[in-house]
Image (tube, rainbow, N blue to C red):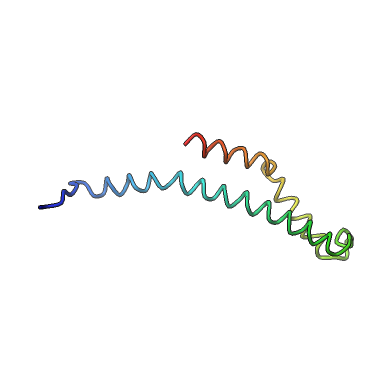
Length: 92
């Protein structure tokens, strides 16, 4: 028995690429949210571990915390990014 092959393999390839596009966008958004949350959490835990000295300008941790805070608030808050991701996932 012969398997049926499409007469337009390029059209099938195009369809696969177009189907993969929104999945890759969702993956990037998910990684973005996870990275922003991880950066903030790591810095906050490190500051607690240092006993609060991470807030002094002499500590490199102070600069890392400010950068993590900037990343967490850039282009909206983490909560906004989570809400956008939830909307994308639930809308299908």
